[in-house]
Length: 94
Image (cartoon, rainbow, N blue to C red; front, side):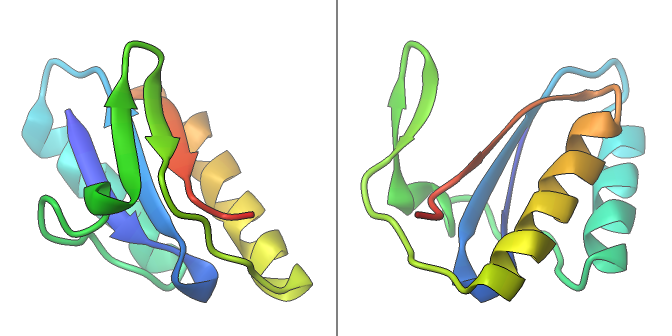
């Protein structure tokens, strides 16, 4: 499964996961995002900032973020990666 969102500082985020229950994983991702002040975005709303490659997603544009937003983004990514169904989190932060 692939989820898209925008993180601190307007950074595009793509979350790739592997699950046996899309509904359960979707609800858990929504919960994690809401605890971190964001929400799921519509499909395609963040993927425009990336190119899909064999290795995953490579940012085509990057966004400079403040130190404070960088700390918030790091916390969000770490929380997402702690969830077993999440495989990889991609961002376009500089």
